Amino acid sequence: MSSRLLVTGATGLVGPSVVERLLADGHEVICIGRSPAKIEHENHLFVQADLSQNCAEVLGGLEDIVAIAHMAAHIGGGSPEEDAAAFQSVNIDLTRHLLDFARERKVRRFIHMSTFAFLARPLQLPITEGHPTSADEGYAHSKLVAEQMVCAAATGGLSTVALRIPSPLPPRFAALGPNVVRHWIASAAAGQSLKVFGDGGRRQDFLATSDVAAAVSAALSKAEPGVYNIASGQPLSMGQLARQIAEHFHVEIVFEGVEGAPERWDIDISKATRELGFEPRVAPRDAIAALLGSAT
Image 1 (cartoon, one colour):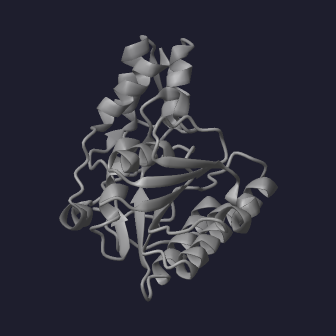
Image 2 (cartoon, rainbow, N blue to C red):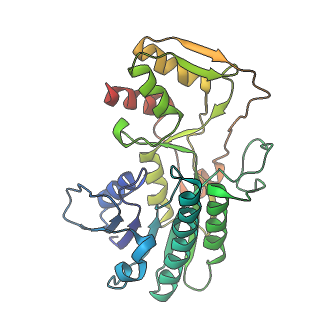
Image 3 (cartoon, rainbow, N blue to C red):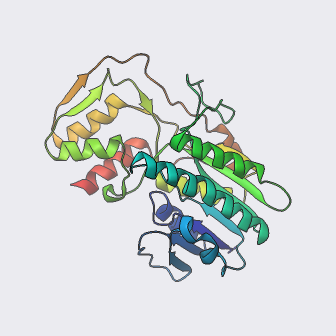
């Protein structure tokens, strides 16, 4: 059944895939993003705005919102002072404002895009939703505070869901965020060797943004309030990742430094599979292959 949905961060890393999926599902989608968007679909309204600066003004005229998918976040990249301010204003304050809006306007469901960045070390495997958390500052702290606010807001008629995701991979290289995949592809495309720390044994989960979007779609109707792990379930070692990229561009790999016991991001998605019917469709190697194809 069609509903009127609000998506924040609609032009970010994950937002475009979420908007595309929700429109395909038949919903009317109000998209809010800081950058211009090219959305060729009649059943949407795009608002170019920075909600962290003028939230009340932008949201004030919106009516009949059934659910909110909150994708907007600041991940860093500025000066320490700029990042600290943005972590507070975007990741914490904006989340609070949106929750207040949801309660005031009788929104039924609030879906929050969360992270694994605030998990305590050493990691306890497999990583479940009950894994201990620990974050005192920076991005991880701001996202932990936001997730806690979202979960605490599940009262009355508002159902809140937090989806924890690992490193998201969009379908095109140009949309890729500043992570190891982008750095290595750019380096290899320039003919540079890839430098891998330690023996390359660290295992990381990468998730196609189309699978993130599928989880959001399912969470709109199926999820009970709470936290859900959303991941590919097929972590890649840094050595495997480097080899796939190096073979594509015909460059060498250089292993350097001494690594202790490498982290293994073996994420348990059984709760999401059981309760949401979530099944990742895109293997990480296939998502990487698509990025390589769009980068050359």
